Image 1 (cartoon, rainbow, N blue to C red):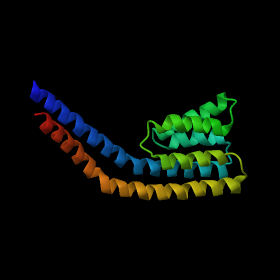
Image 2 (image 1 turned 180 degrees about the horizontal axis):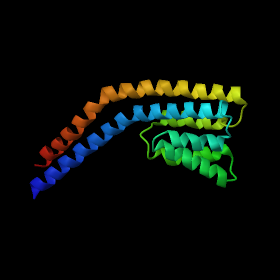
Image 3 (image 1 turned 90 degrees about the vertical axis):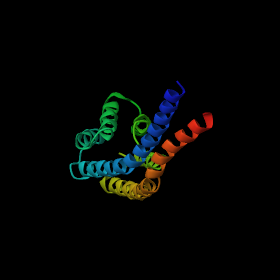
Length: 170
């Protein structure tokens, strides 16, 4: 019975390490997708001259899940809600962040971007999108460094911490 418990503990800690490593690996990918979504949004607003609701619907069709869900829900909520655009943006952002691998830095960038969305003319909106893209580029570089530095370590750490706990109890 002891050995079964030890094996289950080892599997659980190893899985925890691999799950944390997966999130580290997903973060740069999702930041790139977020940058792509903002570029599509920029094109829709500036060149297509679409309203924010329609632009977000078009972005949702062009980006992969779970990011597509954010833009779908945002545009749907804008249609139904009487709240301000920023309040809806922040609410959807909070809901989306729990299912994404993105960090707090990216969330803060997107919150700041949401404060300016729909508030300026085309040139001003383009400047704010470019600013958000440059901040996301900085976060992408940081995420790639963290991925390279910590991904293998947390996998090993998950296994080794389980092994240590087993040895302490035996």
